[in-house]
Figure 1 (cartoon, each protein chain N blue to C red):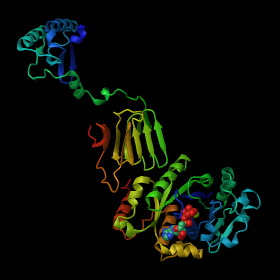
Figure 2: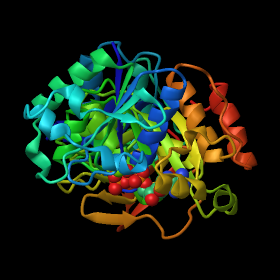
Figure 3: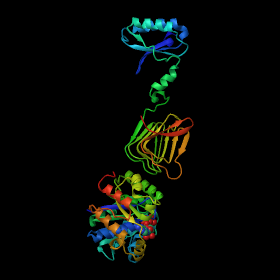
Figure 4: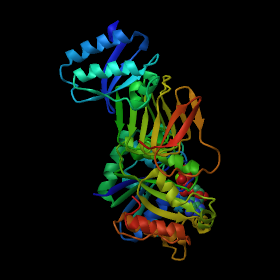
Length: 266
Length: 214
Ligand SMILES: Nc1ncnc2c1ncn2[C@@H]1O[C@H](COP(=O)(O)OP(=O)(O)OP(=O)(O)O)[C@@H](O)[C@H]1O
Ligand SMILES: [Mg+2]
């Protein structure tokens, strides 16, 4: 039976969809069967990041309303085929068109079919959040190293804990080592000091992500890209491997990573 | 009333005989005699100091007091010139602070987790947090607040006007701190991090933060 992971954030635009696509592609390339579910009803974009927009016939709402069979709605990825599929979000209906009970049913069915079910959730704490977390076993919280994003991440962690989704893990996205070094950006230890949840990965800010997104190909398998490397490491950690953190050309951070790895930091 | 005239009490310094007014010294002696008699040999071997709330005691009066005490196997400690010191002040120094407080909430809530952004805790009594109070979170209670972690959100102790309420944290870096009717906010810009546990309380008309030492 597969594992269901929700990818969420407090603040919008911090990289949930990018993260979902890259973890999905990364896990698939490591030999797992993965299903991505876009629960962001109304603002569908996982299909765009994966370059699958033009193949959508049915969506999540069609499935829960019985307009089609589940398998009919699942879109196979260009590169990974059967091993990476997308269940697209409904585009036109209102946010509360899908009920949490329906979502739970759907997720139950998907976890029987796949090793990993990744739920890309809408930002924030509204109805969509409830829908996204209802069937999940684990949660990944994405934040950027900004005070407001961290604050909102903290809020989401509180809500996840209240929903009994304990021990969410953190991805810090769009880190700029040059800015951290100058003291213009929160460093990893500042963020950890507040959120105090396990850090699953740190992804550098990388222009190539924008290029890859426009091309509809996740960056995770681009061997030259630091962000791609970071996502590959995240995938291996999800699979239970101990992978040292990337050195983002930043000494202070590196030392700190060594500390977490040796268990000193907590 | 005789009972108000004088009293014998043991405290951590030994035995203290408090005399309200030296002008009624003969009455004091009679009362003391009766009190010592009823205490049987309870005070035998003890050395007693005298505290005077009002008036003065001459050497002759001290002599007669000494003689009276001797009857009950006690000695008089004439040394420290403690006369004249008002009893109430003395007590204020000697007693732990809490007993001075007019209002002491009985209830204490133990919170075994971090209070995160957007979460708000209201309680009638004291609150102890075994975790952090994060930025964007608030704790409001009628008594004291103790955070065994970092306090970075908003804390309001003594929310119903108790000016003796305190806020303690291992790392006291609140966004805003309120005690009773007073409000203090974090200074703007970068702040040096506190080195250790600190406690905030009202001193005069402001909230003051000091390093915690018990
Ligand atoms: N590490 C990165 N480096 C550079 N750009 C990035 C990075 N991560 C994300 N982006 C860009 O940031 C933008 C927002 O990313 P994304 O759509 O993944 O965020 P989101 O959290 O899903 O947003 P929403 O809350 O709207 O769903 C995109 O344009 C994406 O290409
Ligand atoms: Mg998104």
